[in-house]
Length: 459
Image (tube, rainbow, N blue to C red):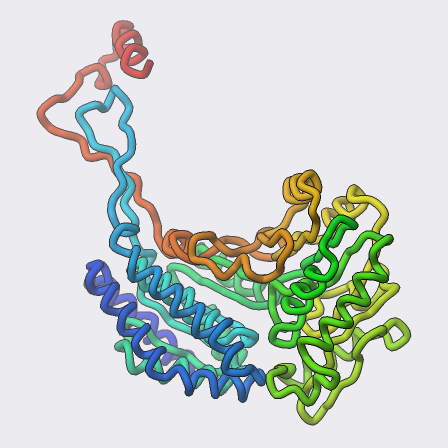
């Protein structure tokens, strides 16, 4: 699709939106139900595409992609009617003969740009929220996950007319053409570098944006933690999708006194969850492409590897790897890893942890394993991060009852459930003034008595 085609597509969607066709709640619910049914219909083909792109097993594909998408769709189908209602708010006494209310309204034509690591879920979940809020949408999936992108295109073309929801495939050229257009809202999930470009281009049209980025998410383990359970849950969260998860624990930051015990438990869990030869495990995924494969290998310091380290270039697989004796000056601590390599750093005091984490860009997630309630309160109060878990990893994003997102370097804005509906809605503040009474005090000529009367009404 060239620049002229993309420009015409945006104009077509804008004309369609202005007809009001997306506003009735019944139309939104019908669209959501149609999308849900189509995903169920093609579930096995979606999983097959994810297997080709990322090596995901059917179970992992359902758990992290189609299952979560269907859950969000079900939630929005159940709640869109109530979310769409006007909400009456208190009116000042001076305007007692009025009704004040907030009216949720769709932005209009929205652009959803999704990444390759969870290519289906991170496309369809924001799309569900955008549809529920009454928008039209142009979806741009990643070129790095072509099989899943084709499935997304197939599903959307079967469910929607192009003036309502449409897909633009391709790479950088198409991204550039899209970002040159005037959208009413842009929702982007991806890297910080591309996020900056999205925000820069959006600013030319004063278009509001949501940026779902990433960062180096710490996993703090203190000496009061249940070491065996912590290791089990850390290994799950870190090596899910071969570490290609924006909220994966990027590194372990543990109390010096329990480091050896924790490292031993993690090695045991890697073997238990992935087998003695992870590269032969059919349920263990792969790195998305050779470029990222080489980047991850370049971050690994062989002298500090204490577990794993093996790889297979032909299959683009890297073993679940642990690095010990790592410091903040090591190469692996200079960027988000986004791969199956886990550095282990140590600390002496919790104050040291908080100071170091706050000296770095705000991470998208933070995980704390502890039995100390005071530690929980201290870390969650003083550290800046998007969201996270206490004594677990990853799972905070698997609910429609809480918003998910980062801030600062890890993004801006959030979505999921009601928060997602709000993200794609503008709330108009409206006062409906009645005509049966018109107080004269606000009109000129002003008199001293006006001030007294106004003061009485505003008390």
